[in-house]
Image (cartoon, rainbow, N blue to C red):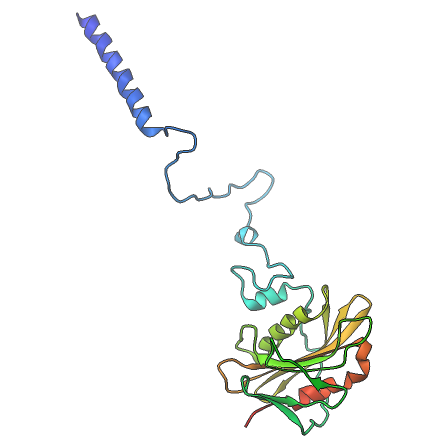
Amino acid sequence: MRAVYRGLAVVGAVVAVAAALVVVLPSGPDEVAAGPVTAPPAAPSSSGPAPSPAATQTPAPSPDASLAPGYTAMEALYADRRVPRLTRKVKRMTLPKPPRRVVKDVRTGLAVPNLAKPWKTFGAAPFTTKQVLPRQRGTSLRGMLVTCPLPTMRQKSPRNTALLAARWTLNHHPQNSKITWLASQPVKHGWMLIYRVKYGKHQSRAAVVVMDGGMSKPGLAFVTVPDSQRKQWRDIGRVVSGVRVLG
């Protein structure tokens, strides 16, 4: 009888283990318990030390990205190969006397020079004011001067705000354009940048002025002139010297 009881005890133990396995294991290969998934800590390899925390961070934003997740606007700017660092080697320039006639932009609180012929006013959208040079055969590029509320993030430094604005203007130049800085200096209520935009065998001269016109966002004045209209490059200096706050 003792042998029979021992046999029954063994059978009962086997059944209990089997029942426990049925409770623990999923009923199918795709049914798993929900919960956070975390990567195990990296173990040091035999060939070298463990990777540093920086090596496991999100990669730097791509040059063409406006702003990669987890990065500030300035970090995205510094990662953009189209926009070189603005160093102290970039000097100020002597600005010409500003024109008397102006175009007023009440949305930005700014006034910009009303340029003489061959410039003419044009439909402003998507900007708030716009002046253009005549179209030329064989190219879609032509000079333009526009104003609008700042389309980028405002920074603590007016200089950095202008840098972001200059980078944004590459959206209005041919693809694969690259910037070369020509002048950088403070202006009243803001900052001014003049630069060359090169694309293939051609280039444009351009400038941005970011200025606080007393509105919720600073105002932006942006002018660009392609080399096919290089006679009007002199107007860029007139523009940056003539941007001012209304009132």
